[in-house]
Image 1 (cartoon, rainbow, N blue to C red):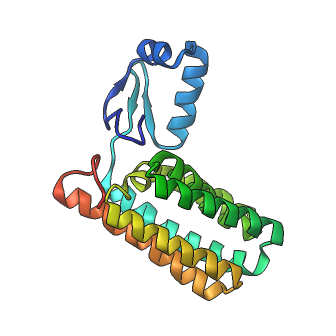
Image 2: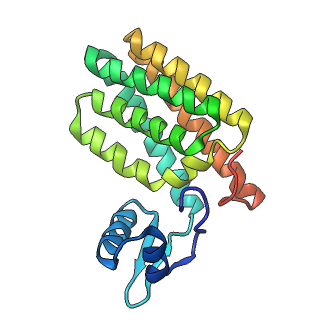
Image 3: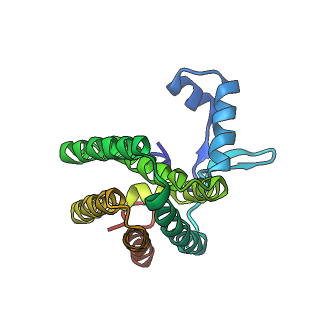
Length: 205
C-alpha cells in the first residue's frame, strides 16, 4: 500500500482501521510497522503512533550514490564468484520478471526485480557488502518501485536487465559493474526529475 502510493507520505496510520482491513490483530500489525520503520517506509513517533515516512530528496540522492558504488562492486565480485546454481536461479527470476513485465503486473515485476538485485549482491560472496546493500536499498524501495511508472522507462529497465544477465553469464565483471552503475544512475535521474516537477510521490518518469 505504501509502495503503490495508496498510503501517502506523511499520512498517519490508523492501527484499528489497518488491522480490520488486513484481518490481523494489533500485535502482528505493530511488528509489521516496526519492520517497515527499519526499512525507512514508516516513522514511529512517540506517543503519536506511526506515519508513512516522508520522502526526503537529499536522503534519496545520497543513498542512490552509495548504492551505485555498492551494486557495481557486488556485480564485479559476483561475475567471478557466482556458482552455476546461483546463476540458474537468477536467470529463472529474470524470465519470471520478463513475464510480469509482459502482463503489465508491476507489483509482481518489482518483487522479482528486487530479488535479482539482492541475489547478485549476495553472489559476490561478501556478506558485509550484501547486508549493507539490502539495508540501503530498503531506504529507496518506495521510489525504486515508482521509477517505472513511465512505460518507456520500464521497457528500458527490462532491456538493461537483459544486459545484466548477459554480462553475468559471460563472467564479465567490469562490464557488469558498468551496467549496474548505469542502471542505478538511470533510476536516480528519474526519481530526482520527479522532485523537480513537484511529483515525488506520484511518478518517476
